[in-house]
Length: 405
Figure 1 (spheres, rainbow, N blue to C red):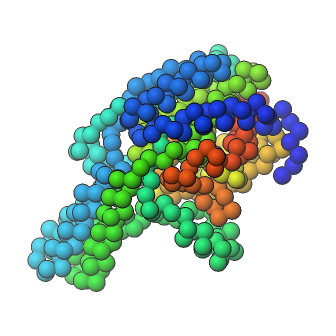
Figure 2 (figure 1 turned 90 degrees about the vertical axis):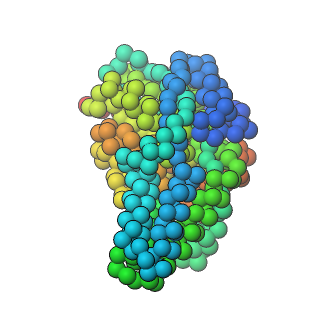
Figure 3 (figure 1 turned 60 degrees about the vertical axis):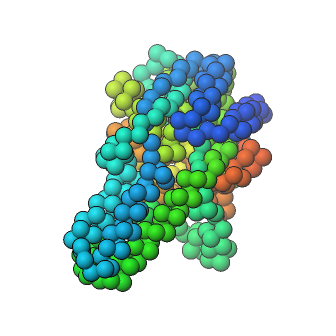
């Protein structure tokens, strides 16, 4: 990495702010839609306002989901498999398992989410929206973070991926797309449906067993505690506050900046839908750029270019990703690109809406997000140097957008 010599380089002031934000909010149990998530939103709004970016809180409704709500679908796959293995009700088993697989796929990929709508479990979350920079400018950069924290669970133990990286470093080095963790979740009931329809008992039994395993994993996640969330995603919230302070000291003429921290991201997108409904109608797609920040506290800052729990989708408009890489290089902070994630982030919503979109993330030497969904995701385990680089890169991206012809 080249020597940091530009005005966009990380500063001691950035580090002080980053520590303050993360260490203040980490002790809160920020489950989506919880009182502590609300407390976090209140604190973030006040802190952004104090940093020179007047902020407000948008109260939004979201459809609760994720592990607990997907349990009945796994059970449907397992029961359908058991029914098919008896030799009776193959057609019913095929239909039930097929519908369960489609419902899981639809939910995990941010589709129509008919299953969540049928459950009707609406809850309240709180999005923080602050405005900084040249508020009268016709170009807008939106920085997206989230302040709720994730449930933990045994499935998030990174030991397997680390051991593979140690044993097969060359293969892991060539892999720039994360493992498809949602494929086996959909695969359980899908295999039952295929096995029942084709009268293949081995296939049906494998699908039923996988469905049972998925149920055990979901039940473990549902009853596990909420992570402190220092990396995922207080690191990004800290970037918003530090960037607000930097924009106060180093304004970017010709650029309006929205600093947005959504709630309920960890239920596979909640608050971002409310932000989209409320704000997208007034954000010009030709003059608005969406940069999502998620888990930027691992040792290496990276650019993610697409995501997809089941089917990979590159984010809209490659030119924006080219701009980010160019801005980072000019700031003396080159970042690795070409990565694609099998997880689900808020970035997918603006991308599908046609906004130029990208995701800044980070990983360790094993290509893992540090302490991902673990109780070890605490302030003392955060790489604050990487978080500070995210501040500098974000500011450099704003300068690049403002100066582009």
